[in-house]
Image (cartoon, rainbow, N blue to C red; front, side, top):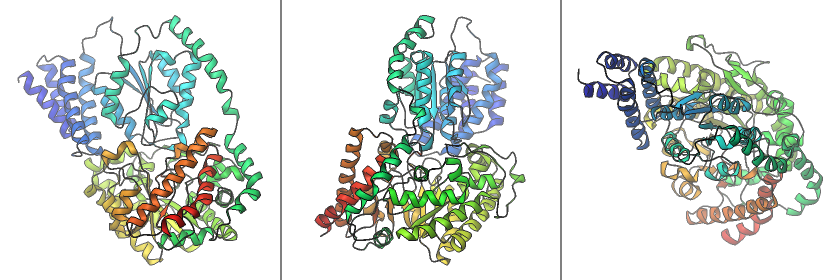
Length: 631
């Protein structure tokens, strides 16, 4: 068989995601004397690049990328031991991992695959990686780069900690540091001292190559490390021991001390519940409602640890009510974490004192999944009781409580692992769909108990997978979309409650909202992802606003810096956003159907005064703006 035919077959095997074919032609390449490195680069890697290009054009989705990656690695396993090595060549090691507290691995795995296809040696630390492991591994392997990822705003701060550890050890200038994930912007990457970020895995490879071209050759020499250590010594000293300072607690105490003298001066003419309900119905209001997602941060007013907030009903309820009152927001959305169902199904959960709980140990086999009973001792029961207490207590301040629970796809990917579930959707769909039926049944029972026992004002279903990059619309409708349409939408209708969806995805399939009668949609807007489908309030109000109330324009990362300059910036941007939303509503014949909110949770280790900078600004300036624009 000719070399060109073998290389073409290797490429096709990857494009088709066929492990067996990749292995067959990898062995044939060796048997026919094809250079192993050439077979990888011009065969397997070329196939990976074809699938990546299809992904970029919206012709392929994440499951196809994952299967292609599996095929590429299957072929590489056979070919790699036969690569002719140059003893003098320095390996280009890149350390990759998802930061501590976050177990999402899709983005990390795609980056690993693409940099491997580009000829780098990826050292994969996995997910929920202890922060000091990055620097330690980089030093051991004289890495040229570290690539950290996260999907959760609550764990983003860990990236800066890793960079500071590299500075302290004198390693920062020895390598390139890249950060990525849906909430990571160029501005955030720059603010923490990273070298760069990219919007996707392909872009990450291009960015990495560009950054490495400027890296000096002697970066790991003793002299270089010593010089780097001295360079950052003063910078680190100026930062001080910020880990020992609980900025959330300090700022919460300040807000508590000033609350009685500040908030009453707003002279609001509607209660929180009246305002939120009226806006939902697109009626006249005194101002637009404001409701950033400040779930875990609210515990600073109690105060209590994040572990207590997420596992003790009374602490959750106290946090919900305190956050609603002292942040002066019009609706509290009750997110604790996204592994409640996984915990009840038997997945191993790590519950740190001050960080979001995470599923760190998935079930090994779909067949071992059994639907548990929701009873005392389960996390679902605890969440239901917490929302019951919160709803009762919130009546004293006439404020609405929106309970939140995981959708069946979020639950399943936490139980089994996201990469595995998405790969198995293509290779073994019947098994995945059966397991999805089980999580659907459990989530349905949780929703029923929320409606009947907790009786919150609203119930929000959270989904991450209505994403036009991860799953195509048709494929989504065969999985969780089908459950939303046939199980949850009828259930909400049965209990006469509006369908409320929270979606952290950067580019959802917007047109699918109507399939399950969505009436409130909590979305995330990423300006850098506009070309891939991320939309702002103008587009959403104009195209869907008559049927759906939206909230989520504001980036939660904006709240992490409570310097006087950023506080002023938040206030000014909040005024501008109100003006833009009100004008857009008016242009579309509407009055109030929008919420000033963040699309993801404000990190629970952040300051509280940045949140009040927004919510107090809305309370202070909102009535005049509303009257001026709406009349």
